[in-house]
Length: 417
Image (cartoon, rainbow, N blue to C red; front, side):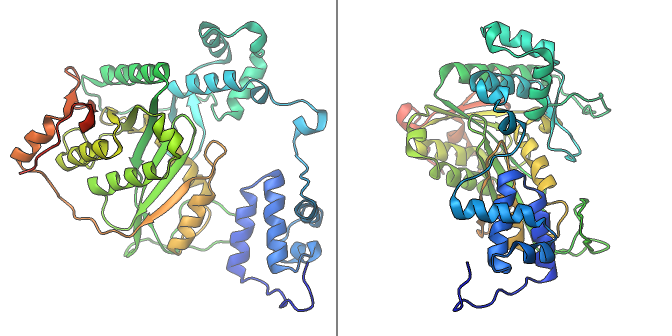
């Protein structure tokens, strides 16, 4: 509550109002009311009526948010709260996690990134049959109609088959996908393998450029995006077990060193118990030029990374032209949805919108890298021979499945020439 000694709240500028309206529109329920209450306190002296005039929000919702903030008692919305029944996935979290894993294994991201939803060919009957094969009892399973709703709520929806099949396919493609499936199964069975998916996204242009989205308020963008001077490259790391997402924005070139530096930053930020419980790190990668199985600088840095963290690293690659199957690609779809209706006019705006997106119920951890990277760094043949001694390549898929053991587990330290 504002006191007589507090300065009078100043109404925000129109562009700020539009950004706050857009931010509120991305939220639901108690989260949205809490945000509206915070803005009402900051800009409207805690008055729900003034907030309605300034932002166009309903005064009842703002008033409820202020009351929840004041008392600490939050009113949860939704059907489950009205009739006392919880959602099936909330009542059966272990089965719901199995549903998510099965659906993830059969899904791909919309290649246009116009939707954050994944699309699975598993129908409700097939999903129920798969759960029975995993040993779940009938009393743990929902009906077919409930299973359909659960899949929809988890973000997996059926849709028509479209012409989105990659045009190119190498002879090892099927074997590569089978190898990924086997590695995932082995990791889940072992229980001490941390599975992550990584990739770089296309550079983000900073300026008044349209991102192809829609907004309820009028947003005018530049009529062309040529001549952009400020760009940032997002590198994402998604934890397939917890759903945790980390995004590093590079202000320099997209290089092998930027990728591994970002992995080191991510690892350092993990809880110590999680790191201690990890025997091996499985990293799913696409075949981009900066991180391929023949990129000398990338492989050198990954050997050093394994030695630094004292963990084995399994590099598992997707086949060429099939990077959209990499789980991290779905995160980029969510990010595009989160900010496509706004203008990323500054690096601060970009970072705030990225940090505000939600992936599997969590906000990502975001970092900005100011380090300048040099392009075209390569190892000589003699130095690469020493690195190769540390790489255990799959005999059938040598470029798509590489195991690196740390020095203390038998891998001899590399001596570079």
